[in-house]
Image: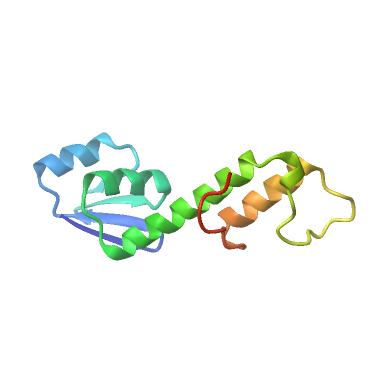
Length: 123
């Protein structure tokens, strides 16, 4: 089986019968008859499934680690105590934001890649 990642998609070719049955059971990959490959949008859930089932190339493993770091940072922001919430940047609004708004804006910046997530899990 060969796996490649390009333009936000995962492509899988030359899967044997057992691997094909596993891939069929996942709803995130679709078989392309014309191109004869499995195709699916890159997301953390799909990369988790692939990494737990198959050997991943280093470039896809790096993307998996990057998405995991973002998810860990978002989860850490979600469970922070109210008094620990600080804006990651100066938000361009006139009024003072409520704590839940600052939390949501911080998480959005991390998810969209506008701010690098902090390394390691914080509680």
